[in-house]
Image 1 (spheres, helix red, strand yellow):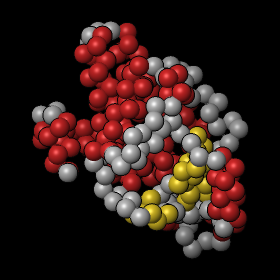
Image 2 (spheres, rainbow, N blue to C red):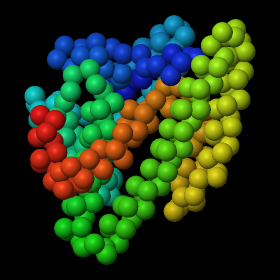
Image 3 (cartoon, one colour):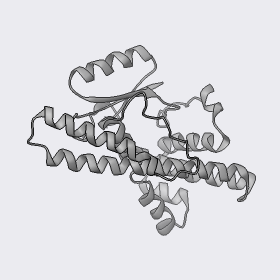
Image 4 (cartoon, rainbow, N blue to C red):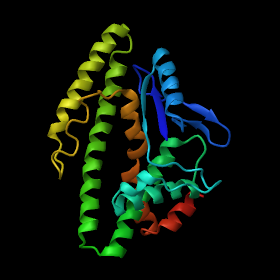
Length: 241
């Protein structure tokens, strides 16, 4: 499956598609790669920043049985547990027209669930748990770098709102180049985890919005899970239901 997201070119504002039941959604999925490529081209021609790429799974929100895909089985046990619990969270709680909430909630529950699965299966000092946590911490550091970039770009767009698009494009490119270059200042457990990521294609507004969509609320949600619900995931999810 492939997913297309889009954003205004000089504003961090997602393009949204409307679907029955789901409401307004800031991404659209395709089972046929070529159909998604065609729509990606249309959105670019309309002046949007786009991000089109493969995803690992999807949820039918409990309406149908969701598949286990062969490429999922290439993941480590922790990553697979996280993915499955992420999608199961969508099937448990879904708020119409609120993608950022839904995805942040599923991301936080998926990660916390994976940690509990590995702890109960292999023990709190196991290599499996340590490797999963190291990888998760590296991802979180990368995601926070992208979220800081989002905020910096948002401030830039507001400052240059009255300037011509040609000037906006130059300033936007300069800031994104700086964001990419500064990635080497982030301290990862595995130093080369994200090296070369942007060699072929530089990030754009649609790319940065992905991290708002999936990661910007996770810390607050995890704090609420433990402080308000004592770490009880069932009680936490039922509060939203």
